[in-house]
Length: 131
Length: 359
Length: 126
Image 1 (cartoon, rainbow over the protein chains, first blue to last red):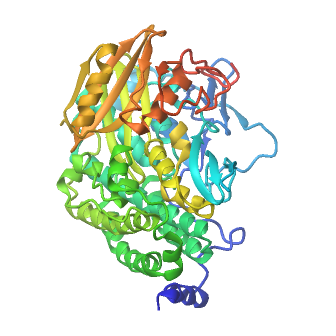
Image 2 (cartoon, chains in turn purple, orange, green):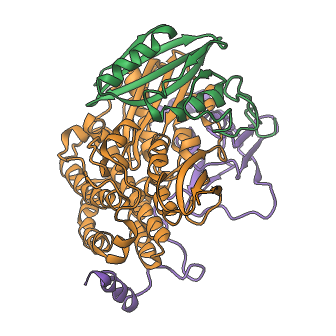
Image 3 (spheres, each protein chain N blue to C red):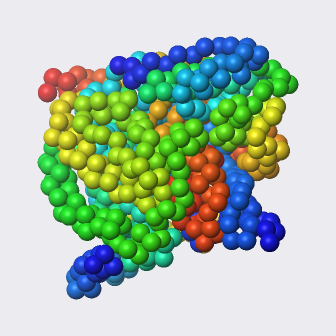
């Protein structure tokens, strides 16, 4: 019966549930580690520029004077290296992919709102250290 | 009688996943000569070493190819580690091996699907890709990427897999293996598949060796070269034998890949059983100085990354020799003397990956 | 931990054919040929392997020096030799299949000799 080797699999797929998801109705599979797109928390960014230096595709641009953090979504290869290198952990990976674009511009600009905290007075730090 | 005509094949053709161009010289229906040419997707990735630091180049090395991306990253990292004399922790070696074997499963299943499609067996194509989804899910759960894993780095790996996850991966392999053996029965025993593949695109053992065929093309002709035998990553601790077939036709190459799927499952099981505890990376200090030909076994054959460094943070030269490039001369030999209608199947039987061939 | 021993011997262009002949007679297979531009010179590696023993011979030549083709001994060498010619402009003499610079179709002639890069800079716009 070498002609009907496929029959077993074919019959099984007919009676079993479909292997695919009804996509827009049910969301796609995502795992905790999935790399979707990079998100920034502008209130915590200290504009150190480490993410810009370590970006292999030069998608990130940090302008310290203008307090701007900019990413080109079309250049970004979602490699996770900016997130690993960020000293204040203000970057994180979102599970959803960035949406498809209709025009050629993936630039997204964020205004950094981080305010450097006032340096506490020396006497206070001393007390904190004791506590 | 015997007027010669030239038929262009590609760069766009229904069976070709990627653009390669062949000029077929025909005499009636028989192919008498073939002139291959590439260059439709040449991106010049190799020259980027001058612009990217050696630690960042991993990402580019990985993006050379969309199918065997993990092994590209592994080979590059391995080359730099050999130049710098870095001692990678054993757990990282085992994780690299596990991911390599999952990549091999996913690449072979993809190829089996495409091959079924080239034969005109659509149902088989869909089922191969359905099984492949299982492998991709595991890769995404453990590394974060379905196709571009990005989990290799110089000095180790970027992500660890917990022991519970490893145990559940080993358990899941059982069901996968059962489904796979149903699928492999179709490829190996079905008459309609056989009638399309047996005695199509013959390559003798001497030709395969002399023309530098690698991977399943060589092993399908009885040349038992498998670079995993050199013992990179954790392969030196695992038991396996290169899969060989002797017929040298398209069916033999298909059978090698089908049997390698089971070999990969076995290797994953062994690796999960033996994986030691410990660190997953070592710190990289300084810059590389020296050169190395880093070699590994991709799903398609032998991969060579030649790396030359001069002590600065940019490498001087990175040269990537991919298995498809070395399989082009055997392809030319196989096509000589075949029928025009068999050309698509033969071209696909070497598993052409033009993206990595041209870099 | 070294994975394998790799030997590299630097020879003159005139000894190339003789050495490759020896490898061919010794039953070695051709792993690859590759060219690198080191300063104002080309460095060409010829790699061979037999039973997982890797050996490499190297020639160092000027830009204009002609290299004899080894495709007479290793038929499959034409892919590497044409690639070398198309990307670097190495003059290879006597290839069995000479594509005349059309194996890899590039818009710039010899792109790897003086590579140029587009849109480089720390920010996308610069």
